[in-house]
Amino acid sequence: MLSRGILFFVLSFSFAALAAETPFSLTLQTRSAIGRPALVKEQWLPSRTAIIVCDMWDLHHCKNAVTREVEMAPRMNELLEKARAQGALIIHAPSSCMKAYEGTPARGRAKAAPQAARLPDKIGEWCKQIPSEEMAVYPLDQSDGGEDDDPAEHAAWAKELEGKGLNPKAPWTRQIDVLRIDQEKDVISDSGVEIWNVLEARNIDNVILTGVHLNMCVSGRPFGLRQMAKNGKHVVLMRDLTDTMYNPQRWPFVSHGRGTELFVQHVEKRICPTITSDQFLGDGKAFAFSDATAGRKRVQILLLGDSTTEAIIPKKIAPDEPQFEDMIRAGLALEEDLPPTDVYNEGVSGEFVRRLLDKRYDKAVIIKNP
Image (cartoon, rainbow, N blue to C red; front, side, top):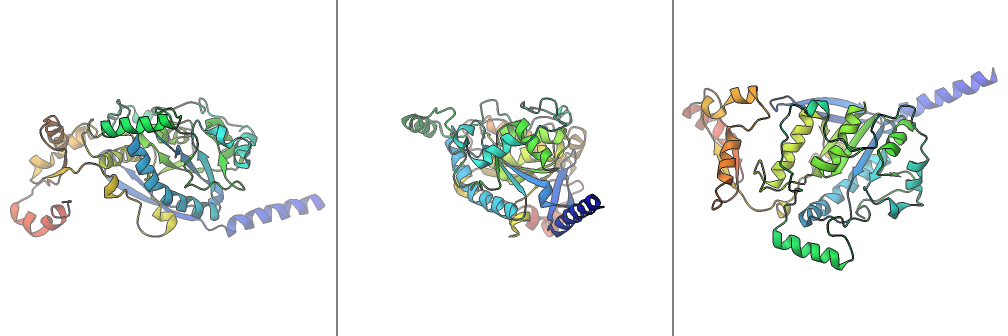
């Protein structure tokens, strides 16, 4: 009778603790094959939720990447503080930097987690593709490593890193200091096995990935989006608190910011849903990089017209292939004496001039900047 009473008390206490949690109210975004967004509202218990901070290093070989990270980090820290205070687990994952954290409580938690009863095959390895991506056209050419620095500035940056005694190709030593690590609660690890063990030991199903760089580490690391998605975690990307390694001089010849947007769309179509930081912080505005980090100004080209311009049939038949607007932009990019361009297709089947002027002009044209 005593043991049953104790068991009943423990179970009652557990249910009461869960009932006392205030769930996160989130709106998850996915996309159809032709790119149409779809929204689903969900509520996640904080105790069943983890945020993994991927590779927010103190330094990087790309100077522009550091500039963007420094601009994004304060907002990310606000997010982590809020989520932690509400009961979510924060996992800091600055890859190749574990030496800086040896002996700390947060690092010890990762190493002490018991081995999971279900340890997925190859969870300790990079994952460069999952089955849902196999037939998709990869959205960015990152074959050059994705650096978007001016060559002269990049050379000066490499020299500066060398002067500090750092490897200019891999100068990171720890996580950026802007992100506070709570040694009483947080976890530090760059191991897919360790992180999986922590998630399983704490019965965590919901995982949020934030950090850099989306088209490389955030998606592909052993603790990244693909591994979490294919192994059954309910994973989402924090799409406004991420960045890509993408050079606008490469396909699809868009701005760096637009390149990140295109890869976010790839994630939403092929890997997992996304959310934004304002859903946690409650300020109604997602983070956006400033004009100071936007790079070289680009000429904006707007396509208006009917079904010939819209070209909806190719979009339906081969949505991942280059479209009409992409080919125009690519053709212009090959002309070395022309400035970089962004091309927006606002064509609509059945369009006529009067309707365009009366109903669509203000919404489709003058909102483009400039």
